[in-house]
Amino acid sequence: MAEAEAPLVRVVREGDVVWLTLDRPERLNAVSLEMRDDLWSALTLLRDDPTVRCAVLHGEGRAFSAGADITEFGTAPTILDARDARRARDLWGVMSTLPVPLVAAIHGFAYGAGLEMSLYCDIRIAADDARFALPEVTLGYIPSAGGTQTAPRHLHRSDALRLVTSGDALTATEAFEAGLVHAVVPTAALLDTARTWAERIAARPAEATRAAKRAILEGIDLPLAAGLALERRLADALNS
Amino acid sequence: MSVSLAFEDSVVIITLAPEAGRHNRASVAALGDAAKYIAGRLDGPNALRAVVVTGDFGCGWTDDALAESDGVPGVEALGAGVQALADMPQPVVAAIAGVCHGPGLEIALACDIRLAATTATFAAPETALGTLPRAGGTQRLPRAVGRAQALRLLLTGDTIDAKEACRIGLVSSVLAPSEVATEARALAARIAGRGPIATRMGKEAVQRGAEMTLEQALRYETDLTVLLQSTADRAEGVRAFAAKRPPRFTGR
View 1: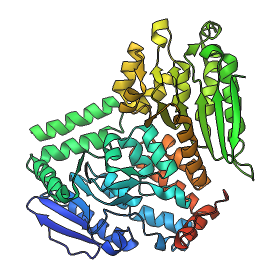
View 2: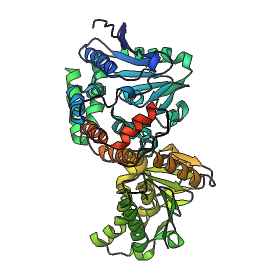
View 3: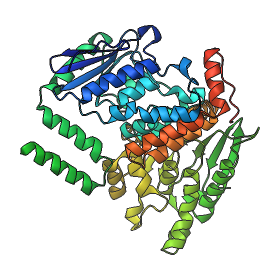
View 4: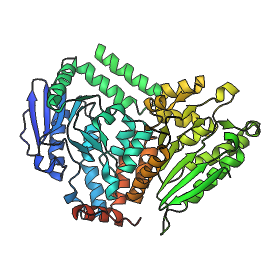
């Protein structure tokens, strides 16, 4: 994969691991339309490059991402245009089906779309200063980068409903206790910890790792018998 | 009265008081009637935005309820009131301070968010009586805590304390007995202060979307999001954020 220098999402390859850096620190990495486009480019490159064995997503500056760029709300000509645009370029669909294992390294705010991006990752490492929330209802709307669907798939239902309907924030420790993140580390150790996880994943046989991720992501939405059949097909393909 | 209502601004508090802690056809019917009444008050100046369920959740069914004829008529009558609670569009917070067993647990599971006092205990003792939960317990418990913990509770009938209930995800917080109802009312008041259409759709997206494949559910979320873009509340929320002032939601 060629290293791309995208303005708002930096893509840097270190061996078998790709680092995706949200790079709009002056706006706490708020997800603008331009950042969506850059993330789309970065993720489709990842999707189409079989040599990438793991990727790490993190934020430049003081936060992972503070959420959607609210200054751009209401810029679509009509709400039907807004719906068509989301369907035409399905960024979160690409992220939710990405074959490459994804590690999120989260510090500062992971609010709204920031938290939702991390919920598409397979491993979430939090710095002890990280804060998590889905504050959309405080502004009269709901999470729209998949959070109403991914949060209850990672959390217990009561915790997911509290996040979504109250907009209340969780500290890193609360997020760990709720099962939202896999580990909490000192902020200074965040990137090194994420690198260790990513390199450990990258060192394993790539085909098996990708097959395991696919078996879980596709299988969980299937009836058990169909999920078991999918697992058998993927295992047979690895053995042959 | 086995069910009473109190109102604090746009929050309604349902207090459960089944006689001797045992539910029967009348007590769950009263709960169902309360739920339907609240569900009917979504709009207007006296709209209800969030719900707290508190009081005595109960330890079991009365002998009369257990003697209801097997088969569809009896079982459905006992489950209908709890179903009406689960069907309420407004977010529902349970504040559980004592025994929450059998139908009490099923009522708690029909709520959206569960908070417990250190004094709360939880159990699904039905199989010891040779029966099954009949108000949704076998379906809502695994959706709340996952299959392994649900089967453990359903197959053993074991009683667990609040700390264990929090560990397995059945409740979201454990608080002092004097604090749980206050905290539940404060949480409900925060929810009631958010965009009311958004909190209802957020609940709907989570509860309905969990029954779909992720791909279908993401499309569903997008459609609800686009629908919300047509509301005055969403425009007000964005304006208020830009002006750094609290939003004034009208439910439109």
